[in-house]
Image 1 (cartoon, one colour):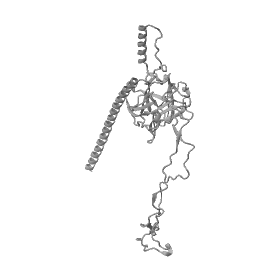
Image 2 (tube, rainbow, N blue to C red):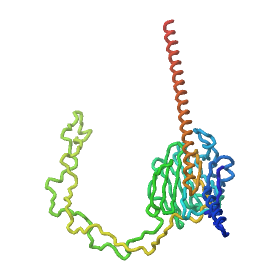
Image 3 (cartoon, rainbow, N blue to C red):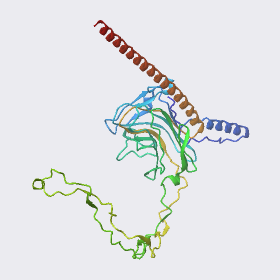
Length: 412
């Protein structure tokens, strides 16, 4: 598989020897080496992919990932991914790569998800962990293995179809404050998260931007700059009621009438026997004159002072972090999921700092989708033709039965 292990934050060393021509030549070689740097991690699940991944042993009944192209595909080689194969299971599979830091660099996380089973409830995201985790103990839920970033789609019913963008910061996981809708059909989709060293981020689906913004504004990493002054409270005599009952408004004398009245059109049945049935009473009907409970009209409150605003002061716990985007250590990527209905296919996992790597993966994705759509269209055409043939055969049988019946009548 195209699994790449590059030393973290690998720096191209400049020559330490003297000599102008030799130094220039060495510099050019070093720069060329930098330009040819590989992605931090890349996996297309071809070949012996399983040898690169570690199954967690934190639970004894994790679901199993299996290699699969899915039902519809064009090129079997590039369409092969790994599929969740067991319903109502947790999944915990991870792969290690050479540790790196994204300090001063763009971070791109990209992978494809295909919910071919028409998923009703389950995760389709990845997690990026520090290099120091124990892969055989990786787990979610209570006491979950700490991660740096969690990204990807999550579906559970029609009301929960979103893309998770979660960053761990100082021991707390922070979900984006924006709602990002994910794809919920049965086709392959490409999910991309870009984290920039200027503390901005971008989410792309199928290579189209669906959300972006500031890490400071869209996540609550930092304490607020201002807080309510604990020494201040709303004065007891503060009036924030905008209106009051008009003291001069009086209830009309004819206001109070019963809510129901005897039906004036009702008549006692002719066979009514008062000795047997009791005294006849007309049924009750709504009183058209009933107006409900009387309330005095409202007028502006002359004592109204407006909404009380709590005075604020500078937060003594506030601090500024100029690099909330930065993580000192990435070293493991994992699928840590729960799925009610299995059948999701993951493929083309990429972690890089190079736009060109991501662009190349987009081209592969486009080729996969092109083949997938063609195969699906061909299958649908085949099914339609089969259905039409079966309906034609059934009609022919019905016609034969009708002919036989007519012949039998003629004989009689």
